[in-house]
Image (cartoon, rainbow, N blue to C red; front, top):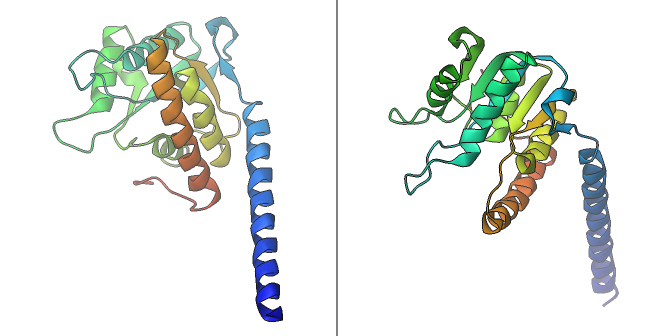
Length: 211
């Protein structure tokens, strides 16, 4: 009986300590997130050598244009023409021969007046983590401007911070969407945050292709 009681108390103590440690890590993460720079006004964006444009599908499953894609491309071209960046790294999915996000991004940026020689293609940006780690390890970029929507930018900067890119900043590719789409994105983002936290704090996840 006494052994069972000791075992129970030991288990309970370990459980409480584990919960406290997790809470401390979560709180410290939240406090750190609030220090990340996400610019919404192009005038205030500092100049950098590179911008990392995070990929997404150009078209929705129903065939309609994906406005998240449209405004990331638009914002990237605006930053380039405002001389805020010299080169754009377009990072997206090219896991199938019939699907090439980086090439689509490049073509659309060229159509907006960005010279082809200033666009760098990353064909293995399958996830935000992959894009960030490859930006650092493959393209040797230690400081960049992340171009994506605001809801996504904080997580991208968190991944940058945890992968030795603490000076990265972000530019919000602004767009207005219906409330129901915002709710859906926020719900997905919560799950994505949990996965990102586990990736960098527990499993030490790497990019699928690190070189």
